[in-house]
Amino acid sequence: MGKKNSLTYYKSILNRFTIQTFTRKEIEILDLGTQVLETGTLTFQLTLKRTGKQQVLHGKYLNLWAELKNGGLSLITDAWNYDQFYGDIHEGLRVADVPSVHMALQPNVAISSNISFELAALNRLLGATVTRHDGDTWSQYYCDGAILMASNSPICQGKKSIDEYIKVHVKELPVFEELDIRNDRIDNLGTFIVEYASHIASWKNGASSGVGLGKNIRIWKREADHSLKVFRSIGMYD
Image (cartoon, rainbow, N blue to C red; front, side):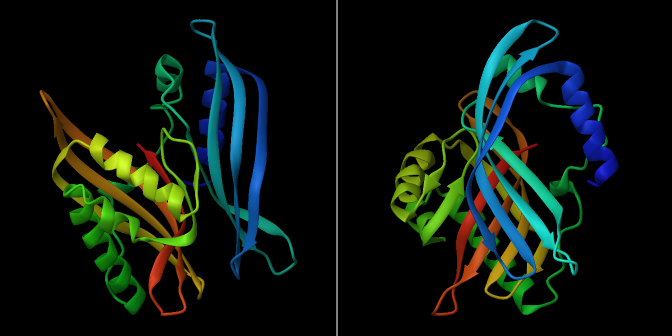
């Protein structure tokens, strides 16, 4: 959170890795009103200094920019994840020595307005839906032109692609003994609503069990029938 900690994070990554190449390719830039949404793919080749191991990482990103009164842009949020798990390299990208916050352990948004009530209800249903591995209901969250950027998976563009991903993904999920999804921040932009969400998952899978923390950014769109549907979404684990 904040410029200082973000800079510390990047410095820590550069101390661990030598970056040979880094490229980002835009998918879209959309004006949401007072914010600009940018999505795209990223690729970079790096070497873990400690072991000398090289790896090419493929992923995707979602940036949100504030529109300034002078016509410029200021970065609000920079989020990204990877298309697959990269083993030792992936573990090296976890930075424990940088001041950070597990948002899932912080107070969530109070239900004090119509939009906070609506999103809290949608998240409560989503928690029950994922717990039951109910792919049919889960798919109904997304609008026709949605883009899903799930962790450890390539981008899903369009409702059909998302439906196919969810159908497979629910079969891979562990048993959730408890799943709590909450709002951490809500930016109501009118037709579009930017939601920062997090979750705490108590899970078991055969002889394994644990508690996982994660976070999402969801851009909701108000449809013609006034329903809210997920327009863009990216998920990340802590």
